Image (tube, rainbow, N blue to C red; front, side, top):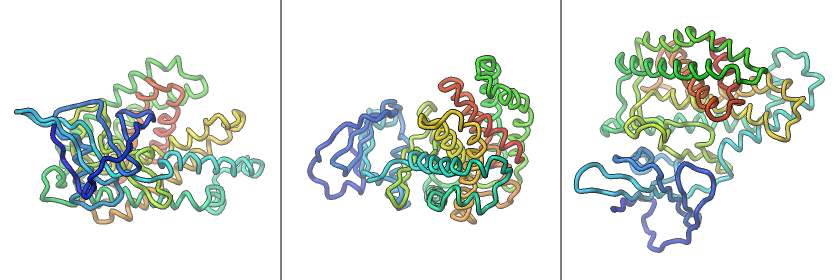
Length: 386
């Protein structure tokens, strides 16, 4: 075993009291007197864990302040072969909860305001900007804007060192585009095979919508295939890889981004690949829709109010996604990983949004069948825009 210290550990000479965190997680965690956070990996693989690699890079090289600072790691090293990372030590990040909880609270208040004006809104088709702003409130949009900015700054930091082979931006060339499309096509076929098989068991309320999405398989594939037409593609970079509202802590004033391990079910080598930054962007935009529907299905919500509020759930997540995206683009203006052509940017973003929603269909059918309506409606919305 070998300890690899980080700068955040400098000056510490005593071991602080600790306790094991009991929250449900994919790894085991300990907190040392609110100073340090230790993550013990349950899935051990040979090679440098991307969580350690990215956190160390952002802290030591990029000097990115919006991640829990790297304090060290413990590796198991053999005489031959790559080391195995056992755990990661980071500076603790005081917070008021994650962005998911913050968002659920904001959506809940939005629904309360909508229900308070139900009689006036019953026949409203498209709300005016003034009415929508009044219903949403002025606080959360600023949070979504800040999260978009921090996400953009994260990607800029990850692409900041062209001399570091592990992090230097690389061309998103024709070969890369073909590889991405083939992965999207395989994911689509897999998810839609499961959806077709489980269609009879879905709740009747949205079975018709599922059938509509199944019928749009060729349209989805054609939309994703358009990424092969990119003529001035952006670079690909190291990204978060599993980005959603639960991966950002809210400090009360700002956000701290965490968990760069990627999707644990994927192989280590795959989680370290450079990809389009828009994959992270799409993940966060999809997370806004999940928050809107999750808040809709809270136990305190009256069942008779849900059908009326569903349209407003769609309105809310589209608005927040737009605010997040515009802020992200403002922070990354001129960056090599953003397509210069607006049409090419839109094609790439929509392809990643579709791919993420398609993946969600398979996940929900295997874990929470009642939630499959979320990605199904997400796909319908994306196709309507394209």
